[in-house]
Image 1 (tube, helix red, strand yellow):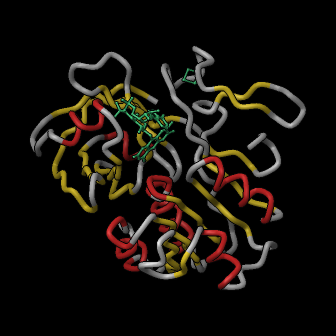
Image 2: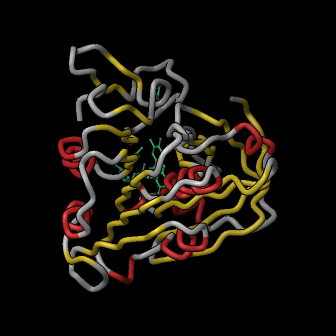
Image 3: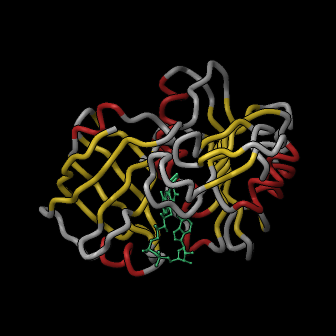
Length: 245
Ligand SMILES: Cc1cc2nc3c(=O)[nH]c(=O)nc-3n(C[C@H](O)[C@H](O)[C@H](O)COP(=O)(O)OP(=O)(O)OC[C@H]3O[C@@H](n4cnc5c(N)ncnc54)[C@H](O)[C@@H]3O)c2cc1C
Ligand code: FES
């Protein structure tokens, strides 16, 4: 992990309030799937953690983020040619395993699953990606995942596209077995049901973060035995059963 500068080479809105930002940075060379970077947004003291959605090559990576508040709003207004101060890659990401996998993402939990899908597909494995959104106008990442040859299943809460309901409704409707290995990222409530259904797999947690390197204890999670974990350093990806959801 290190401090680096990152040149914005492109920034586009890909769905309402969802931005895709392409960065030129040497940090890309050391980044694996499910890791994140901390971005210093001009005018703000605390860095904002954002997952790497794709490593394009050793010098380029891609982020997908939601305009959630003031920091990400400022970030979304920056144009190609602006240089950012970033720190990373941070955390332990998803493992790349030697089998077919089911990836499940809700909203802005989806971005880290794209690089995860790519690495499994490059190793010759089949990837089923179940993506959950509020409605079809919010959908993003579907084409990106399909162009990587992932099988994409969509769930929307209002039924405007794909299965009506949650990602778990789609899992049941498509008969996805609880014995498959799952890798998931999204709201805690979603991860909880996924952790209860699938027998093995991994979940990526999101916590508010300050230092991002394990020093401030600002992002604590617990093991079932009551021990303390830091989401930024011990995670954000944890094996199902090793962390209380
Ligand atoms: C490891 C990690 C990876 C992340 N990856 C992504 C990603 O790939 N794409 C993406 O869109 N977002 C991601 N997030 C969430 C992102 O960091 C926050 O949305 C962002 O920091 C909000 O900053 P802001 O200044 O715009 O909003 P603020 O004004 O700080 O907050 C606005 C709203 O966002 C909520 N929020 C703030 N920080 C977080 C946080 N860390 N996690 C959850 N909610 C938060 C606040 O509670 C509030 O409701 C990630 C968070 C973590 C911890
Ligand atoms: S953000 Fe400081 S320990 Fe995780």
